Image (tube, rainbow, N blue to C red; front, side, top):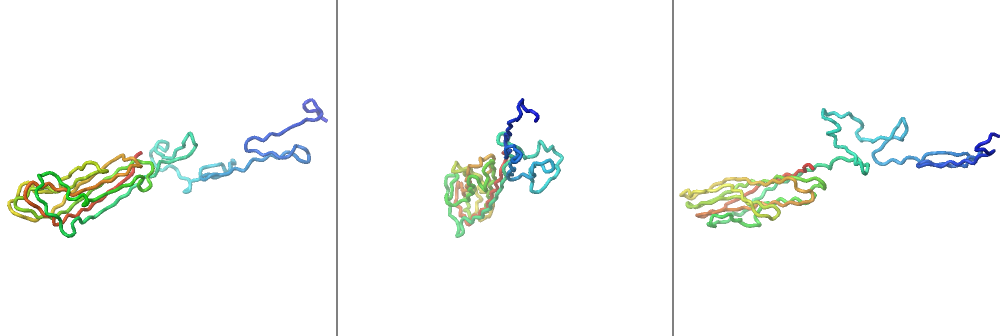
Length: 247
């Protein structure tokens, strides 16, 4: 018998490394059997790790070369977090819009007397409200912007000595009102009349945090210096458009 390790018989041991299983004792009747623990695949991987079928990301729509002329390394949005190893793309963009039509005085409006020429809200309950809740339409990450607008059509009767303006006062989250004049008679006509006109007011904001709600309210206002007016009707068409930004 050929000697091993200086002895007539050697005592050997096989130690399994990570992911390896060893069974048997090395004897002729129970030889060592070495095998690897089967790989368990998470979502999004394909292949078995062999040379012929390597592990790879499995895109649902298959493979495709970068079709744009810009640089893929600069413009692609798929990235890997170096700390967690997770692949990620930027959060989705969201947008939403709403339109409102309000007939403020279906039975006829108020008669208004001089108020010193300052802007006065008709009634705080007579308004057009846009309320955007926090994390609107599922936006949990991105800042967002909005554009809110109202267009009013008003039918007004006035006395021969009437001098007045009509408009909208806009507030954001209960803050101070900002008045946008819409129409008026700044110098008395010298004769009574009845006319229909329209006017527009708007508000816009950018970079609103995702978790910040926003309430925009447009109130009807009048500034009457002299004479008397009657609001026969005042109808408002309003719309708001919201969209997420970057970031």
